[in-house]
Structures are given as C-alpha cells and as structure tokens.
Length: 203
Image (tube, rainbow, N blue to C red; front, side):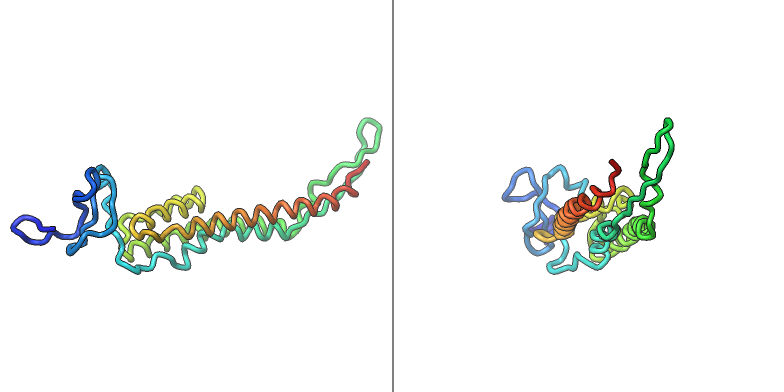
C-alpha cells in the first residue's frame, strides 16, 4: 500500500481493501492477518505483536494460580467439632463450641489467603509492565486485580489475544481447569466429613 507521493505507508490501521467497514493492520510492507471494526480504530489502536513475541511469563502464572494456594490449604484443614454442656430452661443441652474449629491450620489458611491476594496484585503489576516492554499498547490495567485475580486474567487474556492471535488465552483455560479441579476436590472432602460428623452430633 502506498501513501501520498507514491511512498509506502507506515505501519498502522487502514481501511481493509477486502472487508468493507473494517480496518486491517499494515506493517509497512504488507497486509497482516489482523482486522478490527472501523469504529474501533481510534479507540483501540493496538498494533499486533511481532511474530513469536513472548506473551507469558512467571508473573501471569502466579496471578492465575495464587488464589488456589489458600484453597489447597483449606482442603487439608479438617475441623474438630467439640461440644459443651450448658443449662437451658432447667435442662442440660449440648451445644457446639465455636472455638473448636479455630485450629492453627485454620489461621494459616486465613493468612495465606490474604498474602495470596496481595502478591497477586503485585505480580499483575509486574506482568502488565512486562507486556508494555514487549510492545503491547495499553495492556489490561493491573489494578483490576484488586477486585479479583480472575478479572485481571480475563481482561489481560482478551487484549493479548487481540494482538497475538491465536495465542493469549492460556491463562483463562488454566484458571478454569484449576477452578473445576479444586471444586471437585472440595466435594469429595465434604463427602468425607459426613461420616466424621454423624457420630459427634448429639442426640
């Protein structure tokens, strides 16, 4: 494609000659395989990454999997239910002692969840900076991790997929697989707790 004066146009989004209503990325020498709607040209303006540019690093995998660290500890935590006798209405009644569930592993699980949350925010920041260094224009903002890790993982994956097709969606699939696996394990844990609880329930 040539610009004014017969000089080759510089890299950018230009009206696609083969798809009316869309723009296509011109890399300065030839048309790429990247399209987007005409109305998004000014709003998005993200150029495709160079072929083979690294889009995954250790930081994004930690953001993706850190939420499941506390979950794994929760799977290992088995509460011990103790009952105490209290007098109510002239009758002795056994009631669950709520303090009995607060074992050391319970507190480790709670603290690990807080630490995982904070570290996920920090690693999302590092990952966002890395994407900028690789040439991603306006990567998904790391501060969305304050809401939830999955918000950042999805937003980041969508933008990276836009500029590095067909790559970019792996963190979403890993997060989904970990979610399904941990929930299956939790179901098995709850089923295993039923026989443990039944004998301890007072008649």
